[in-house]
Length: 186
Image (cartoon, rainbow, N blue to C red; front, side, top):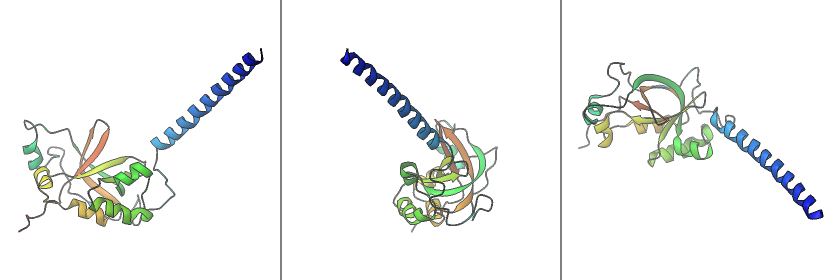
């Protein structure tokens, strides 16, 4: 009899614990889905969402959102659907932001080092949407003839206005930025 009561009590405790765990996990997941991670940890170094510190990227047209080298490099001349956009956001080191939530002035130097060493560049919009930022011109990018990465390092932790071609493939939001092709090194 005592064992049955103990088992029943243990089942209740486990049920309540399970429900509490589920509620806490759901709350954490909801907190992670919307808004900027750790919004008060460190403000951007420069610029605001109302007054960006810089404008980056060349305007693209609805008719031709991709550069000639991108279209030429596509499979059978068919590119992924892209549309012109301008988005205001903070330049971030995507790896540190997605892994530990770091952004803003306190993370500027680390973010610059990460991007300098090949980590992906991101843009953090005011609503918490994160975009991957990539040089648009396919062949020059492939051949190391673009300097968008340098511009991103310069503006790390700054709120800027980015203009480019937007894609969403499998939920991965990306903005391809034109206008950073450089001359071949001699």
